Length: 187
Image (cartoon, rainbow, N blue to C red; front, side, top):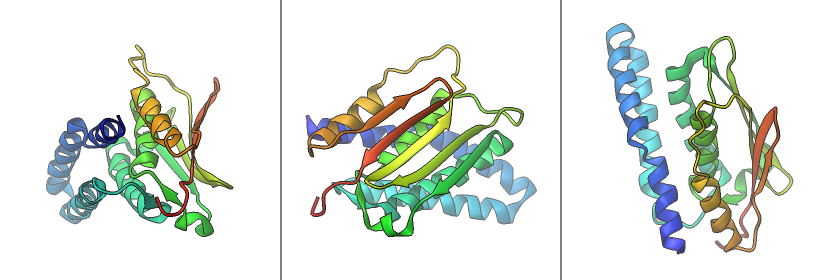
């Protein structure tokens, strides 16, 4: 079951729509801003390098994961512009903490997938460290119709449960937040 969970988590990150949207954005940028297109493609390469490199790892440092998350969100900000606001409140001391590879990115991707975002009403995502883990929160602007299966969060919770840890999900009306705990050293 663990291998199935990890495979599903990885597959969720290699979303074909994400790649299609990135390539479309890159093509459009080459016409109007070739230098920005090169930077964009460098970010895309960084994202996929991480995805390929993490497939055999059970944990990564938060520092590694945050480099991936920041590159992923820079790509998304090109796509959504003023419709996406991201803030980071990450304690440098916490960067050595260990997390499931792709877990923080999956939470960010869930926020993007399940909420609307416009310049008038931007989606606000916050990534912050807590004393024992990482919290990803966003303002709630549900897309209609809601098509969530809840599989991503269920898989993430199951992966952590196998280490004796609990994922904290707080679905409030205004703000949705998920906190994942740091993994024990040696995992």
